[in-house]
Amino acid sequence: MAALTGVVLAAFGGYGLAWYLGLVQGNFSLLLLLATAVTGVYWVAERWHFLPQRRAAAQRFEAEHQRRMAEFERLGIKGDNVDVEAARHKLLLQPWWLDWTAGLFPVILIVFLLRSFLFEPFKIPSGSMLPTLHVGDLILVNKFHYGVRLPVIHTKILPNNPPARGDVMVFRFPPQPNLDYIKRVVAVPGDEVAFLDKRLSINGVEVPREALPQFFDPESMRFSLQYAETLGERRFRTLNDADRPAFIPAVGDFPHRELCRYTIEGVTCTVPAGHFFVLGDNRDNSLDSRFWGFVPEANIVGKAFFVWMNFGDLSRIGRLE
Figure: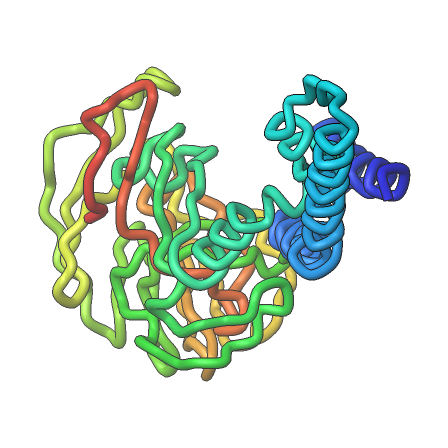
């Protein structure tokens, strides 16, 4: 078993290294599921097979020791100076290959359940959601707000709240589902959404917008026009780059593209059933639904709701707008 366990652990380690070096596209959900399953098998084997074997061996040792001591006493011979407790402890001790499998199972199981069904942490890698989310923000995502899904296969098993306009949502990027994206939901199924001349409209009604002082981004060393927008019950800030045109370049082909009309002023789309239209709050520096289309309901991961850490700026900790 030690050799087999070594091979299994080496396989996990090799996969992690290849992922880190960029040689394979990693799937952490699948890796965590496999780790839970493998360590769970070892845990069951330890509980019902290996541990009883070690306990039986310890009992045999104690019985043999007592028999020898009784025999020595009968013969009038001084008994062996044996540390029975230390020997018993050594017999009951888990071997290394069970320490690294069965011993880790409870922790891995808790992480798996929390991450799969309750909350999942993410790190913000880009400035597409400025000023709401900054590069380096560590956020928590509610995995059950939009319904409970099975890990890896992403099948919804329990419905909950539908995504609402203004939600900050994490989803699997439609053109490349192994990547997670985060954007703000601005339109839901049946809505006609327009982003023309850098103004957002929903069903023919322009979203209220209030000018704020310019926003300075220390990463790019640039100032951007900043606005407060109100979408439904949510008020949040957005950025516009005065030097960028309203025209949307390099639009690719995507499902339901026929529901979108592109002009020099921007884009107007009708959101199909079971899909959502999302935008980055940093409107002129975000690759979002204007470029690659709608987010299918099946691609939803969860609702972002809290920044729990930013090691470069602790003041970032708090709830999202």
